[in-house]
Length: 564
Image (cartoon, rainbow, N blue to C red; front, side, top):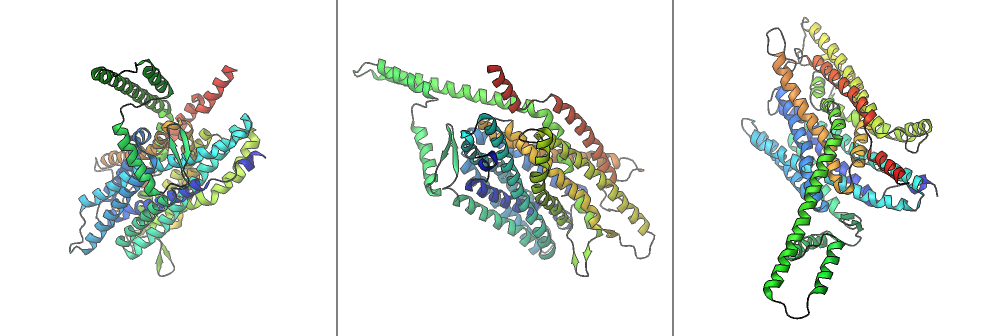
């Protein structure tokens, strides 16, 4: 049986979690993709403040996994972490729906920003804990699938595992993109046409269905434990909840906590040396206290070593992680300034239908869905033949290609924005001038969206596989947290850039605010050129770093050769 047959298909648990990940993206994109429109048109924020609010919220959401991941790896059960965080996520979406409902019923049509921020914060907390745990739980299912390849030879086994991992992450991202596409396309139209109450309620319903679907798969999941992966095929959700509570109660009542088999052997030897007569109570108590101190010392040492490993891991990956930040900054533009651009352009199709600007974000996910199979079926086989290896293009090369394409996309965005401004300036002298609409089709924005979608295939999927492969199994949630934190810190960098540029461009009378509320006076083209320049610098430094970076698999191969 060849490698392709051995790696064909994913398990039922992997497939179910991919569907769940898609549903979560549908709920999130249904809110996030058009949030800047809600903040400017309904909450009445300025363009720059709305963009900074969206970026800060996205950054906070993506940064939370860095703090929750280590706790989830060390102390929390992934199943219950997913269940609890998705429930918090659902409560946040309900609060957001209530905010829109209360605002629509208010006589002044005002919305409580405090309640709005609280609801968004709950969504961030739920999503920030859910995402890395869900991906790590999916990776647990993948590890169980990878064990099936153990009967192959070492070389074939390595290629088979690499192929299966690549398939898993590609299909995971395919599911995520499908959910994103549906969320952006349908929800932007519903929000612009039927209002924000229904526009926020539907993502909440989707999140509730996600919780039910996740619970329905308890019988087919593979659950991780300290000793490895264990299959449970008959456990119901309620039995698992009872066992979880029972485990916590028993743990609190236990006198001895054995770290490993060596501790068990030591305890047995100690019992064998005790006399079979009734011992003095004080002596027995002293023995128990001594054993407890030894156990606590071992646990403290393990925690210290775990923290040191976390620090070493982050320091090793920090240079590559830093160079990916500008890619993340560029990816904040479709949900903010690209959408504001589209609101000023010609959006009519026929006499009655107007394209919601946020729906153009769907072209990013649509290009991913359409081009991902071509990447897998055409590009990968070609690179395998050229490079004569079992995997084709490396993860580092994949991320670099995506970074380069994102720079091309932002350059095109700057050129199109300059064209829009030129037409707007010419139209000012005409008697029928409409300051809110420029006679330039919104479809001029499509190339920049499509190129970002293609870059997404390379860089984002590559980032997932990169951080998955560079961390040990026990720190896997931390690995996925490092991946999501790229977009979190990138969002904060984007918000900081907006603030700095706004202060600079408004500091003198001769300079016009680049983010003016009047889009005919704004200079977004200058901002896009600034992003192109900083991204180019990051890309060049990234290429240099790749020359010196050694992956974990390469280091493992070197150790094996040294042993031989």
